[in-house]
Image (cartoon, rainbow, N blue to C red; front, side):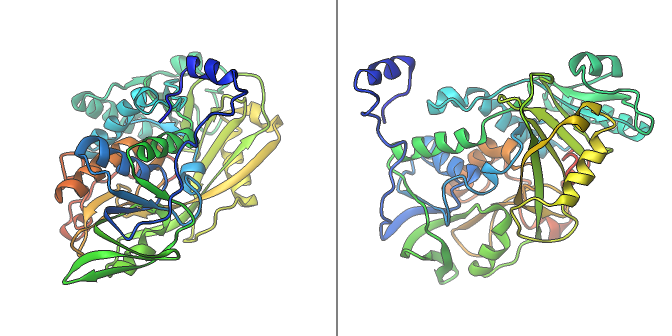
Length: 415
């Protein structure tokens, strides 16, 4: 793998940049691998990367039915934070946040991690109590957050209206080391590193079946032929239930569309991420100047990946009181992603009833922020056959046992 650097760019300029290698190879699938991961999004690629880096397992194939990073990884609003309430949630999201801080150096790819800070507005007395509780929990967990007053909110985000007639800003839960990253670059960086380790990333290869013998996985059937494996990881976000059905078990998840949009580019006016849970909206400004805006999931199960007019109306109507300036902006583009939701709004990283088959799903609307932590935990599970400390509480069997990890509030506006 040719290392990226300013010196490499200078050397490449001598031959008009004709000598760059492909970032990752596009091989034909082999007949068998030690491990197959279904899904070449952020979570699947991170799982493959940490299988190689942490556990020395490199005979790995990552299968993607479309193009690399073309699912939820390329369809989110790039928010990174770890200010969750429950201990297992805070641990895995804080692991992810800390890995984001060194990811550009680790992967030799600029993922544009921007620790600009994330604030979650308290606009009711109920939210004030809830966020103070979360701040106290975060202090015990070693996650650095604080509850700030409305004056500090206004100082951090001057364009905000803290005196709204319906929902005045009473304070906010502030995580200064939260922020945003470049979603495509995260996928590209992991893919490049995996390919350099000898792993096969196979695009346009849809899995149509899972084969097994004696209660243990033996491989997958794909549109590019049958491929054998000893271990199988299912990391397909909104399509988790469908692939699980191929493997012969059911999941306690439902799939919904989560929509987002961006405005036309404008001059810099907001250098923090703001989530307004009471009115159901959140917003940040991209490096290109676009206002990145999102809200809640659709109110019905679906598998669409497009926007709708009702989402524009509901989300912007909610945000315009808190951010009056957005009423004068034009929308540039809109999109949707398919998210898989569990009953307690926490993920599943678990063994399954099929031996050698493991599942990573249920991230709902919090998938991007968790990518490196999720990959770290899933790789450990696949390598050792048992969950490590990060994944131990996220078993799919917790719903049967009543061991819920309730993040309905801390998970944010989209739940």
